[in-house]
Amino acid sequence: MEAYLLDWANLLLRWLHVITAIAWIGSSFYFVFLDSSLLAPTADDLKAKGVDGAIWSVHGGGFYHAQKYMVAPKGGIDSHLHWFYWESYWTWMSGFALFVVLYLWNAGIFLVDKQVFDWSPLAAGIGALVFLAAFWFIYDAICRIFGQRANGDRIVGALVLAVVVCSSWIAFQLFSGRAAFLMVGASLATAMSANVFFWIIPGQRKVVAAMTSGQPYNPADYAIYGKRGKQRSVHNTYFTLPVLVAMLSNHYSFIYSHPQRWAILLVLMLAGALIRLFFVQRHGYKLGRVGNPWPYAAAGVVLLLALIAWLKPAPAVPAAALPAKVSYAQIQPILAQRCYVCHGEAVQQKNLRVDSEALVSANAQLIYQQVVASKLMPLANSTQMTEDERALVGRWFEGQGK
Image (cartoon, rainbow, N blue to C red):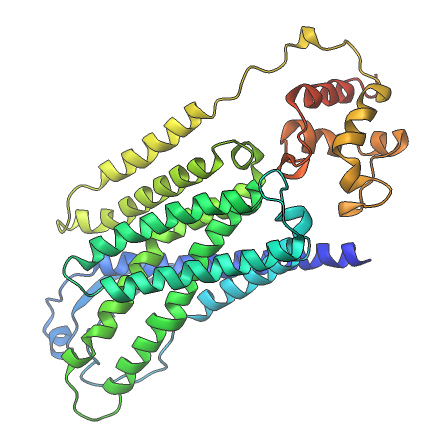
């Protein structure tokens, strides 16, 4: 019953996490587009209101006129002021809850790979939490110490890149390959949501309170909040695609089981950041504000193509080298050595057992999909199933029903 309830918690939390992440990323992408596309107003009524930038757009059968004010509108705000932050908070909360249910609750299975680092499930769980917190504190310290200096953005960018590289390498020295990918992505995602919670929203609240208080105020006194918030918002923009690829990686064992998986993750994240840079700047390029961003997209695509070429799999076992027909007796030792630890008499992960011929035959399709087609099982290949063994299981499946 516990496994059944955990599966439901996994499904519902993952669903919530995806929904809120779509909402957060969608609103973030939209406002980045606005900032890149707003034009200085030419209409006298907009100038009189203090509009700094505006854009007309059409969607859903109607026209929209977005306007941006760097200070409070001269006529005040005459309707509800909407804040964009719950999308961020719920994305992190649902993601962390999912992390607890899936990874911390089963740390011995999902976090620990004794061939990488031999520690207890409890120590691995604590280590994972420390890893997330440490990344945020180091990243935040870099932004606070160097962010407002001359060339601060470049210095911060270089140092944050170095921290991401180091944290990626460390993650793969401590956790299983699948978990390490997730830990790096979760670290960036935690920093993104913490940016909103600790810097962007508090700064905006102070500015809004000053602008709507009815008392005279000097915008220059509050400019620092805008600069800090903008800096963190830009970081969030470029973290987005790297976070997404790290989170999606757990479905693809060929990358998290590779000996150089930490380098694979870094290349994927760098390619994502470059492609995101292209999308950010393409709007400004159309208005003549920045140079042609296509080289960034091209560099990202080249990195991905190079990665595809690098990870090209070794030739498969020739069909002629396999027996014409494989019996259950021939694959039973493989299952016993590689699969019984999680799907045997003592433990039945996902309510699945494969320790008898009847159970194996009943789950033949699932076994083939997970072991041969996708190679997702054994999880993170923790029991070191070989390619020859997978090919043998595949030949056994092909002979079913014949």
